Every structure is written in structure tokens, then in C-alpha cells.
Amino acid sequence: MEELELERTGCPSPPAGDAAIASLRRALAAAAAELRGASGLLSGRAGERARQEALERLRQVAADLDRAVRSSSPPRGPIPPSTPVRAHVLVADDEPDARQALTAALDGGLEVTTAADGQEAVDLTRSQRPDLVLLDLGMPRLDGFQVLEQLGADPSTADIPVILVTGRGDETGKVQGLSLGAVDYLQKPFSERELRARVERTLRLLRSQSALRELAQTDALTGLPNLRAFRARLDDEVKRARRYRTSLTCVMADLDELKPINDQLGHAAGDRAIAAAAAVIRGELRETDFGARCGGDEFVVLLPHTSAEDGRVFAERVRARMEQSALSAGGCPVALRASFGVACRAPDQDDQPADALVRAADAALYAAKRAGRGRVALAEPGKVRP
Image (cartoon, helix red, strand yellow):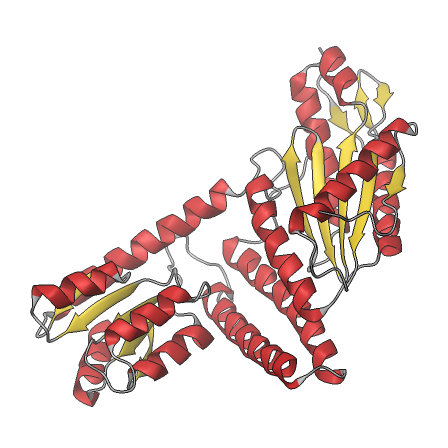
């Protein structure tokens, strides 16, 4: 069998840039969506509570961007493969000498921020999202146990590791701290070597977990996010649409002629057709959009702040580009065709579950299939139902 060649799109190349740039791009995309939603609330006739929530979200966006820039912006010039990203550590202790000693012990390879009491530690952790927190137990306003409880109860900080660094030597305090989510416990006085070793071990584990999580949420064939990542993003986008009362459109896509390609040219050719379709979809996404492969030859796209009609236009553009990106095998053209279903969640549909939007788009997709394939079908208004 002659090798299948792509005339126009080809297989998607690896994502541009390194993981740091990709992380920054994701943060910028999320921030753009939050800023649009918050600006609508602040400029409209929203109540005081809604305005306060919008302001809090804006503060959170600023913190996310600060952290993304710190950890994602590469230095100018070539980057040696072994160059580590500077991790950000928050040191929370009410004693100035202790804060100074901890900062000095970590100096050299880490970015360090300090907090003088428990409440400040909570506020800085929420706003700056450090990679690690070194936390004293005995502090004013909030003690270390209360800080652990508040950080653990907040989804935005629950995964940030905390190492307790305290003068308390009783086993009860250690057990309580670990049960509240601390990952390690270091008693004062401590050696600088031991502190650095524990910090480095925790950060190493954190990097490994992040890499595994990224790998687990990426489709190996296309490089797009997979179904697991899509489900998490869907919940986030629906919550954001509810909060700011904005529209959210979902587009489902399914290749029409994959089986003949597999049967006639083999599954390797079919895989390249799937990769080519993914490349077309990726090329049409905005920074705030989200596209994923949800299995086989099916794809799903979320378009925030997008009406049903604009979603239809997007789908038509992708459909046309796929047909223009014909595959060639043995000199014979093989059309890359797909059907699309589009559904929109209206701004006032607060009571609709997240998966109702996907079900409506899926139903529209099958309507497009029944109507002859290679076309776009739009879900009827009001069809997004539980």
C-alpha cells in the first residue's frame, strides 16, 4: 500500500513553543474570558453582591496571570534543557527572625514571598498561587490549623502543598496538621540542608504530578485535550457562563468517510485523517475556545461568548477547510468530510446541567448525519434541556 500523503494540512505538528508558553497561553485565554464576563457585570445594573463577586474574580485573574508569567515566560536567547523554572514559595511565620532565616535558607533558586500572620498567608496564597507554602502553626488572626482548613476548603488552593515549620514538637499537632492536608512537617530548630531537601523533594513531586496530569488529559494522536480534560473544562465554562450570564456554544463534529479510509487504506491512514481533521479544528480556535477529541473520529469544541449563529459560522468554516484539505493515496484524492452539530446555552439558562449542552449538540450532529452528511445542523432554540 502506498503511503498516504496530505496535500494541504498534513499531520499536526507539535504545539508551538514549550510547555511554559502553552501554560501562559492557557492562562491568558482564561483571563480574557473572565475579564469579558466581569466587565459586563461591572458596567451593567448588577447588584452589589454580583459586583463584589466580579471584583474578586478580577483579583483572581490578576493573580493567575502573575503566576503564569513568573513560571512560563522563558528568558531571552536559547534555553538550556536543564534550566529549571523558578518555583514560588510562600513563607508564613509571625516571627521576623524566622521569616528571615527561612528566606535566607531558600535563597538562590526560589522566589520567596512572606506573610506575617495566618490571614495574610491565606490571602497571599489565594491571590498569588505559590507552588509551595511553608507554614508556622502558632500565628495571630488565624493559626496554622485554621489556615490549612481554609486553603483545603478552597478549590483554587486545595492542591497547593503545605509544609509545616513549627517549634511545636508534640505528636498531636503533627498528626492534626497532616490530617488537615499538610504534606510534610519540620520542627524548629532545623538545619538548612534538611529544609532545602524537603522543599526540593516536594517541588519535584509537584512537577511530576503536573506532568502526569497533563499527559493524562492529552490525546496522543492529535495533541488535542481528551474527553477527561473536556469534561473538566465544560464544568468551568458553564459555571463562568452562569456567573456572568453569557452565552456558551458547543460544536460536535464527526468524520463522515473514515470507515472507507480504514477499510481501503488501513488504520494508519485513518489515524492520519483524524490528525488532519484535528489540525483544521485547532487552526480555527481562538485563545478562549477549547477543542478536544472525545473518542474515535469525534471532536467537540466549546466557544465561550458565542451565539448559536456564530457557532454555525465556525462549524461551516471548519467543514469547508476540511473538504479543501483533501487526502491523497496512490494519486487518488480522498475527501475529508465531516458533519457538525451546534447548540447554544442561552445566558438565562441557569438551571441547565452542563451536559445538557453537549447532548443538544450531539442530537444536532445526528440530525446532520440523517440529512445527508457533510453539513452543519443547528439545535433548535430551547432544545438545551436536562
